[in-house]
Length: 483
Image (cartoon, rainbow, N blue to C red; front, side, top):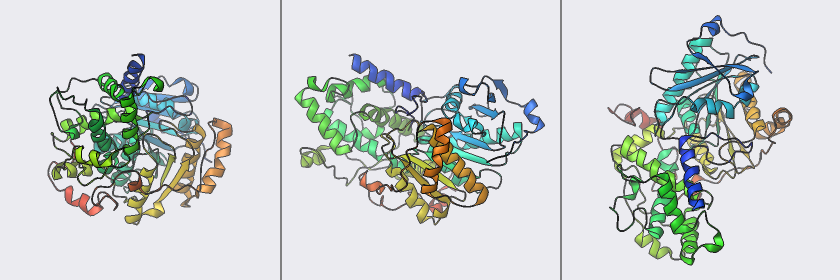
């Protein structure tokens, strides 16, 4: 998911979907390195020189451009470049991207450039869903950087939120190829993959409709809820947020909510384990993102199921389970969705993850899913997971980003896997320079993914897509989601 929660530093990436969410909700309420000399090609770069974000104005040179697929990109090379590169995969998915997308993320993660690393990021060639597409565009900006500045000493991938899914996918596709990537770090990463990771929003969609019956209203044209919204829906994010508020009272003074609104809200939150603060955002994803996945990426086919799921926690579970909408996935749709987004766990380079224990959007149990997939693939020697006592999604402590980047670089260069305790101890020196605090919890381990999401048949086993299945599917013409 995109960076939708307020970051600890007070900054956030304001993607298009985030802007729609904020406007909709607001409307309802109203109602150790050595110096490295770049190659001579740095003076004849194919990319266009551009103004750096203010925080990097005296520290780096910045460049922008547009690749052959139409994706915009931003690059930054610090004046004291250490010779290594961070390739960033941004969150989302937003509905569309423009030339500001990657530059906004450069400002948010400027600490990586301040630490001496060059930086490159793609906007991706289009909005909407597509993990393999985004991974290919991320790999393409790495190649463009090499063309302009020469091959870095080491290259690392960073993915935030949905970008964590993209970075992890890119690690599986490109990580084993010599000279591509030396390590990957994901932060608050969406690591369970799409076929299981979005079941929380699917469950919210059907439970919400059972209690609220206003998406659609009885007087409106009916449609299967796995569509999110019909392809030709005229509803806006403001409209959806208004209907959520109408049913639950979210955004209004709790004392002024009706008894029915209070009951609806209590039931929805209890059954879906959603928070009141994140309900409007999650409903926008359960409508507009599902609309994009189904209508634009899967030709109207349904990749979701909730057959056999028992919903619990309401004031009358028997009535809820008898009345909630049920449906089964189209096998080809689930296959294509899985091929695009699910992870095999077959990583051949160091992967270091960092996740806020209280992340309200991409809950921390995503890390348990990823660990299980990597362990089953017998690649757990390449995975290190760290956790922080924060409750943010969009951005964590600046010092913590510097800490895990340094730990990943040391791991890649020495071959010695760090410990969570050592990573936590090293944060203090970065906090002195960058601030934000150090909140690592070396002892924390997340509960299994199925403790957070009602598992579908077979969903307790990981990975969601084995390497063998991926290989077989890859031979099917047109498999996956089109770029």
